[in-house]
Length: 213
Image (cartoon, rainbow, N blue to C red; front, side, top):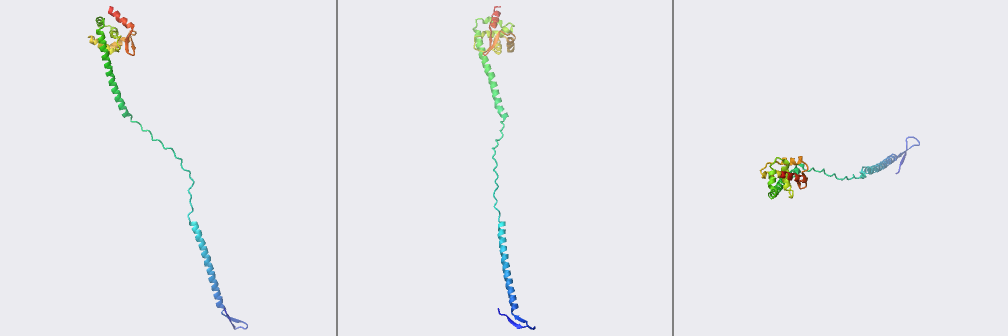
């Protein structure tokens, strides 16, 4: 750029024309450059901040903590259900009643069979008349022993009930409890076996002695 000089009012001084414009333009250019540099610097800073922001704002990777799995416990068994005792008792009670009902029936049948065999043996016994006469005495031990005496060779049980029914067939009243009591109070004349009460040799002798009297 060319400058023009002209003598100033004072001696020895010159006025240089165009330098002010040059300086202003130079300053403006420098200012522009400074502003550009500043802009670039700001832009760089802004870009760096954005990158940092993006880096900071990016969610960190979260890894699941290494938590040990809970130990599997064995399933608890369900509580036992109590059986209905009342319902179970009914069939048992019913069965007991049936059994109890059958028992007397079987016993009655057994007594009837024993009585029948005893009466048959009595009818054919050689001492029938003497035995019937002896049974009319008030000797309760003798009355208890005579049916056992008659049925000693029979394979039947001559109980106190059979003894009572035997004498009833002969027209003599003799209660079963009395027949059992007489044998209990006079031990040694009869004995209890798996087949029922059986007459002993002492009982046989007692009857034979009574028949001779």
